[in-house]
Image (cartoon, rainbow, N blue to C red; front, side):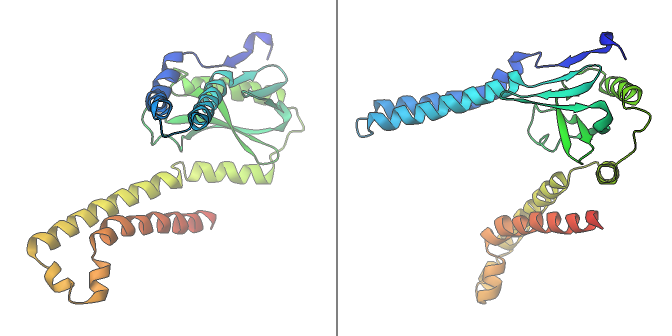
Length: 243
């Protein structure tokens, strides 16, 4: 690999950043203005809230715009707003395309690229995803080719990192996604159960027993049950995946 292969992945569309920030900026500014105009609220409170909000917004903007993945002949550098981390090619254990655990939010990339190093750490490569790169598979193949060329003849897989990569390939869907899906299904089932009991008038019978009244209370079947399903899915799924 020569310098012609050098790659830099940065934020290309600033409109996406402002689109993500706008829903928080508008109510945040409205809150600060409302506090400033309220005679019962000390000015120091409005100033403090405004300062915290401005600092948080600045941190988000710098984190997104300053983040980058830089690839050269010797290493892969992950740059953040307040620092950077470099991984030499011989220390790279794998470059994988994985599902984004945060993709449950609309507008975020569904697939991201992660790097596993010799210590077993999983490092997300900024702005290397299916929204920022048109041909993500082709780009990753180029990076893997560069890695295999530069990692050295004495390179060998590290057990800890290899196990993590194998587990990620065996279970490509994040466990959190499965748990959220199970929770939503339980919430829908609880809502249907509540409607059936309400329409049939069974609540009059259920309320005669404190135990059944508690178990079939609307808050229990629509709120508590889905939460328990979510936690149970995480626990059982985690145990099964570790096995």
